[in-house]
Amino acid sequence: MRLFHFCKHQEFNKARHNCPQAGWTSALRAPAFAGGVKFQGENVPKEIFLFMGAVIGALAAYITAKATGNKQLEIAKLNAQKEITLQENMLHDERIKSEVSLEREKLESLHIILSKIALENSQTMSHIQSDSNTEIESFRERYLDNCSRLHQARAIVDIYYPDMSESVREIYGKANVFWGHQEAVIRINIKENPKGWNSNLSEVLKAGDEIAGNVKQLQYNISSCSKELNKVLHRTSR
Image (cartoon, rainbow, N blue to C red; front, side):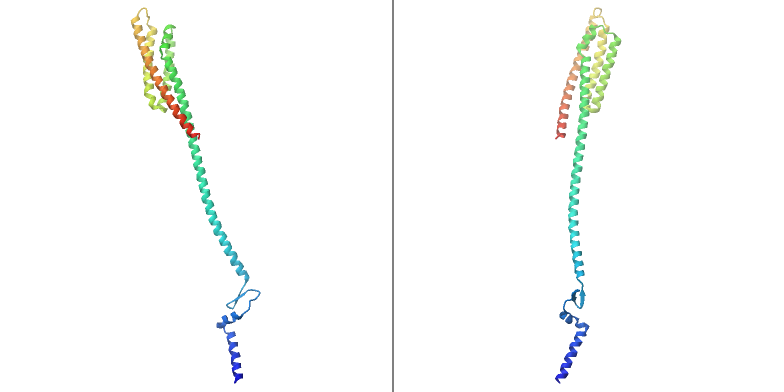
């Protein structure tokens, strides 16, 4: 009887060992092999674990690099925007400097022209022409030169300083009065017609005084404009 039970026990163990469903039992008792790890009845090579570790490391490195790259890209964008803003400001300053330089040149030219006009249409010039027996042809040439200066002055103020245009037009009108009566002064013989001579001279002097007043006011305005331009130029030089 005991021999029977012993034989049955041996057959049961053998059957359990060979049964596929009992693989977990044999797996628990299976030792580790040099070539891999025994897991649920199968060998998993070490290379698999090494490969998985490499993949995980590479993925982590990629995520880090991407995050770093995005940060660097944002920094690059900010630096580029700063550079663009700086260049725009520099171009803006250069444009202002160019415009200021042009306006100062025009103001200088206008100031010089007005000074010449004031002299040509003054009491001093009237006496010089009256006492020097000026020829009519020479006198008219000077009149045309005076008109040319006035045209230059009108062009400058109409284009660049419209607020001054009215004063320059007044000067132009008074200048025609001045030269018209001045020619009469030259033509009239004071001994033969003293009344006519004095009447024309009075109109010459009156027109000359009005021209001088307008020129003085315009040159004051020019000085004020120049001061403002200097302020603008100073701000762009900071």
